[in-house]
Image (cartoon, rainbow, N blue to C red):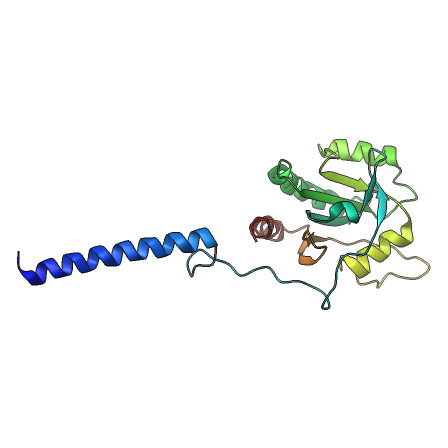
Length: 208
């Protein structure tokens, strides 16, 4: 074999080794041109985080903002007597729960929009219908004003256009919250594509 032929063989071997090493590094770091992704955006005004809260879940246990520190969670609003969007939303939320129910430091917080009706026993029965374990999927009730304020000012899932004498939060949006209480995404819980994106974004957030 000529020197020129040997040179080309060595050149392409080194090129292949270099490319494989670079690709492996990019996969590991998650920042490569082929496999990497940018970090999820932080929504809201600069410094926006979820406000303090204290609610009660389907087992009568208190759930607070402080308990959420360092945890990733999805927040939604629903009510048990809803017959239009809520059943679709929580059927889709079951997909999220099934995928991440054994993932450490991941939770779902489902807040009732109708705390006057949705008592702890009613929430417990509703949670059982969805196969939810309160260790990582909480159905929450509490003070109506605090619930609504959180939806509008913290989770950004409702614009408050129903505020007034007949005020009611009825929203299809899911909010993805990181361990620092920042909103990292909003998703329409009635749309399969949005739910798929939510699941993908949870994966991204877990690995940030």
